[in-house]
Amino acid sequence: MRRSILLSVLMAVSMPALAVFKCESHGQLTYSDMPCSGKQGQLPSPIAPSDPDAARQRAASERSQLERIEKDREKAQADFARQRQQKDKLALAHKKKCNLLALEKKWSDEDAAGASQLKTDKADAARRRARQKAERYDAECRAD
Image (cartoon, rainbow, N blue to C red; front, top):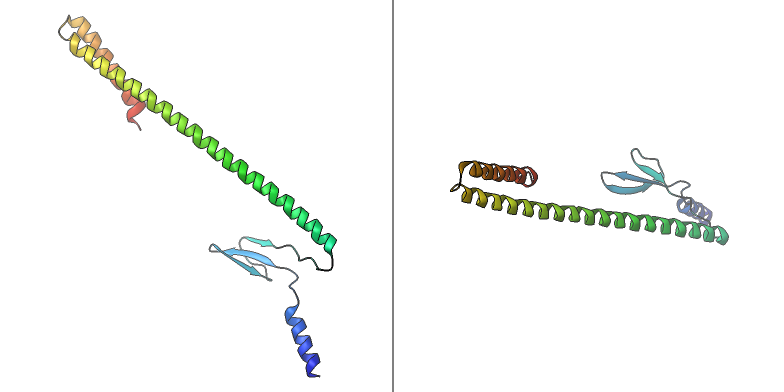
């Protein structure tokens, strides 16, 4: 009699759960046989060890799913690297343009300083060009 009670208790305790839920709460993952609120996902039911064909099919299915996930991850990484490279190229082009504008501004300032000794019309035109170069430089490069 004792053995049958002990055997029935052990069988009741060791029976697998029919449904297993994966719950995420406050950044922690928990597993339960009861549905939870919030993000949840039901885990696939376990395969009985006596069915090797179903186990092989499921393993093949999971392997192909894993390969697809890996390809998607690699593609996302490649896209991110490509975007980063493009962003770096744009930043370098902008820096080169700003350096060129700074040189033009410097040269215009030098021309305006040298022209102040000449006729007033030429000096005014040189100062105007220098001011325009400075404004263009400020508009394109000082906003950074």
